[in-house]
Length: 192
Ligand SMILES: [Mg+2]
Ligand SMILES: [Zn+2]
Image 1: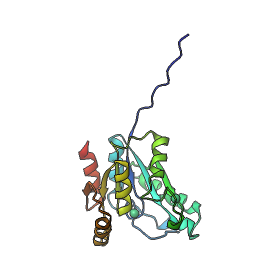
Image 2 (image 1 turned 60 degrees about the vertical axis):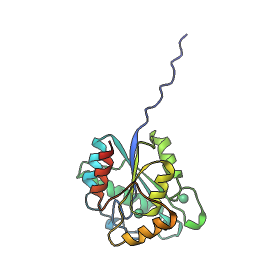
Image 3 (image 1 turned 180 degrees about the vertical axis):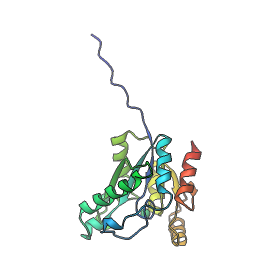
Image 4 (image 1 turned 90 degrees about the vertical axis):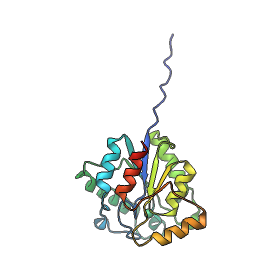
């Protein structure tokens, strides 16, 4: 009797995107979902990612939960709102992964930890070498570097010098430094 071999699942590529300071302005421990708005250029860029067969996965540190500043439900509400906003661009975020811990807890999921990325990779069969990360801070570049992702830094306006200092102190360098989310998207798509 023939036994059908399990078909290997094809690996997919993804663009991992940071949330605060990248998908939306960094409003620091945002507890009011109604204040969450997409940053400029994000809607069109995410639509392009999907058109080029990238999954879009948001990985975000939300220590405000662990600090007791807002409940996990608030995080979910903000994520639902971002996806509602994206709908008018014909775009969406496939999945959100967040770390609720405080830095002192030394968890493995807070960026630059890579646990959430590895979980996403298992959940969605994501191939890291053909995937990218777009973020505004050192932690995004560092996590991406550890995982072998194509790393794109888009510092928030006004924070460029701070981010440069952080990177220099850690001896880190992104593959691309972009001045807008749209420029970051172009770099991802240009890579092929
Ligand atoms: Mg950020
Ligand atoms: Zn964590």
